[in-house]
Image (cartoon, rainbow, N blue to C red):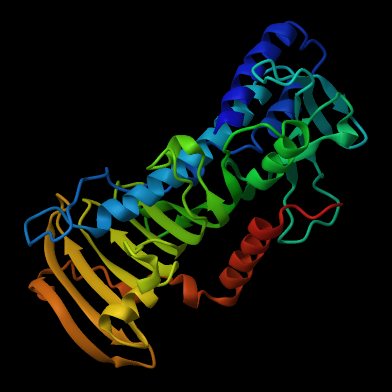
Length: 406
C-alpha cells in the first residue's frame, strides 16, 4: 500500500498550496461530485469483532469459521478504506480546475514529493455524466479516477484507481457504484519508470456495491438499510509488508466474495459473507505429493447478537490425495453469541453425488444451531440469479483485464 501513503502525503501538500484558492467555486455542485466517492460505512462488511480460534476446537471453544470470515471481511474493509481515504484526502481540498464542457473537477497534476522519482505526478478527476444523457441501468452517473504519470500532461497519465457512483435521488447517503484498484497498472508504471523497484503488490481488485432503504414491515420502525457488496480479486499478491515470510513471495490467488447486510431502524441486524478463494491455500511440505492449488469456499451468517452458522468447502488434489478421488470436504459449524462453537461436523463428499458422504468428525448437536438461520436461504456465489451472476462476471472481467481503453 506504499502508493496510498504517497497519495496521502501529496494531498496534504496540495492542500497547503491551494487552501485559499476556492473562491468562485459552486460549492453545492462540487459537494455533489465529492459524494461520488462513497464513505467506507456505505460499503464495508459489517460483521462481529474478530476472535482467535484454534484448529481442533471443541464445543465450547472459539469457533473456527467466524474468525476466517471476519478476517476476510476485515482485510477487504481495510483495503477499500485505504483507497477511499486517499481519494477523499485529495478531493477534500479545493480543486485545481473545472471543465464546464465535461462537468469535471480536477485535482492536480501535482508532484508526488514522497516518491524517489523526480517527475512522479498524481491527479484525480470526478466527472458528472449528467442526469439527462440517457444512462442505462448499469451505467454510473459519476466517474472518478486517480491517475499516475511522469509529467503534467494528463493525456499520458494512467489510472491506478477507477470508480463510478450513482446516488439515490431521494437520499445522498444511499446509492450504487463500483471501484477498481489496478495494482497491475501501478506495477507496469513502476516497471517503466522505476525498474529498480522492489517487490510490490500485484493483481487487480474490483468491487460493486448497492446501499438502499427497504420497507421490511408495516411500521416505519421496521424500515431497514440493505447493503450488498460483491467483488473479485485476480492474480492478487499482497505487498511485502503483508508477507508471512519477508524473503518468500506468496503465490497469487484468485477470489470472489459476496457480502450482504440488513440493519433495521429498531436495531436488529443480519449479515452474511460468502467467499471463494483459488490458490495454494493448504500446501503440503512436499509439493510433489499434492497440487499447488485448492478451491476454498466459506459462508458465514450472523444474527443480531452474533449468533450464527457457517459452511466450509475445500476442493483440490490435496483433498483427493487424503480422502479419495473426486471428493471434496464440507464442514458445517454453529456458534453462540460469544462466537463459541455449539456444533461442528465435517464430511468428505462425492462431487458426482452429494448424497454420497462419509463422516470424518463431529462435535455437539446440530439441533442446537440457530434455527432462524438457514444456509440454504443465503445466496451462493456459484448459484446467483442471472443479474447477480452477470455482475460478478463483469467484475471478474474488470479484475482480469482492467478498465477498457476508451
